[in-house]
Image 1: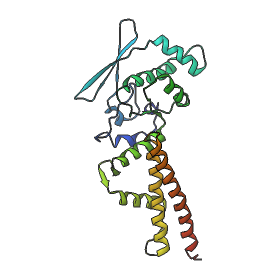
Image 2: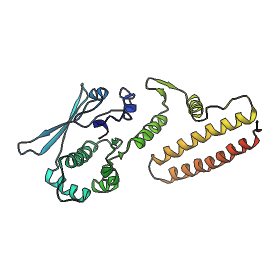
Image 3: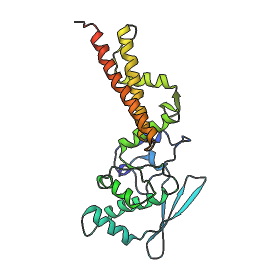
Image 4: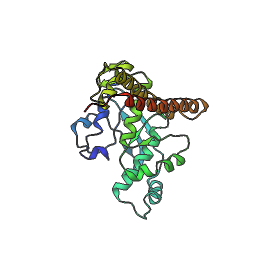
Length: 249
């Protein structure tokens, strides 16, 4: 849905289309932006009866073909439950079919994301997950996808300033701090302490996020609590620094 509108937000992902860590595939159909026409789309193959039989994905050098296996009649029955109506229109059927296509494409790679702004699909994503056992669907809205991509890159120690320019961890978090606190001048001890604690606070937030997406086990729970407790201490330290800064009128 995002690509059909004039929404420019998805363009942020185009910066990483050449990255070794990502492969971007769009759904078939018209797009508003010329930038997205260069992104490969999956191709649907239909049999003689008119049912979708396979999905092809090509990046120009290699091509994969995946059998579909679901009947459109069964998809429409699921749609009646999702949309709470007895007959689906063409757009609703098309949106629901994309989830079934995605489930097939995602069978061999559980780390993919399906980015959409369709509220019906987003509200029912946990329901879909329970109906496709063993196949994480990764249905997310744009802001969630942006957060996951950001944490994924940091997990691989890739700190991007631009799509083709990275820096080290310390400099990236310094720039992040500067983007949020624009008028902090270093040189004063109390301001230096404030800045350093705030930077560590940003790091601890990302560490909690990394643990969240790393799966559920005793280690991730303990690591999350560790970084969360450190976060609380840092917040206290930030306000301590504020209290020590002399007021100037």
